[in-house]
Length: 330
Image (cartoon, rainbow, N blue to C red; front, side):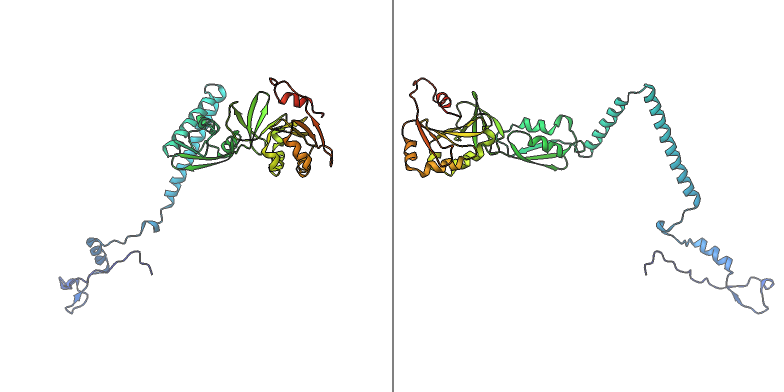
């Protein structure tokens, strides 16, 4: 059993003789112990006190009443202050926007004092995306504390950047933020007019590149070529003999492909039949010989049928691609 307090009785006092026979209760000489009242006074003199732990004490009801009265007074005061502020705002004496800005400023200062301010940003995993683009996506000018920072919205803004495929944001308390990104991999160069763009396997435009670039990537041209390039490049990769001598590929009328070889020979492929046309060319010995011969047009748009037409001679100073485009019957 847990004993919260303890006490012991006083030692019995030494017996005293009766002062006079008049106060004796009997005629016999006897020793009388002190009365109960005298014993209490002696105990009080010695200083014995029974201590009750603070947690077990029971306060009088008046204390509870005083506490309740204080709470009611605080509530009434807050209500009156709120009413006065609302009346001043309604009358136009106080600008509500100014009050909100002041309160927001104090809240930001409080969060920063508690160690929840955004003091340091660390970005890793990026090579073609600039730091400023990622910082702008984080909206740092408007974010000073973690309470103001919307991680989900920031992730969406970062992943909308051209090169960014995925991103991850980690909060490192007390005041650091780590951003780790993974960039997309370019798979082809899209020639559009007089400009060239890097695209990934999904056709997403990653960004422009200079004319004198060193990217060892296949070229595609024509409207809509970026979105359909993945299927053609996959088919060409399965036909190594043709893929090795391919210069670029053109998207015709946003329906079908024409593959241009290094010797300007064109392979006219049928719509959605790229693999079948390439299979037909590689499986036929005469067509394979035509690939290495003089410039020609090898038309395999009709299933199971191939037509070879020679090119007319062109001026040496003229561009090679232009006359090839005009000579094809779409």
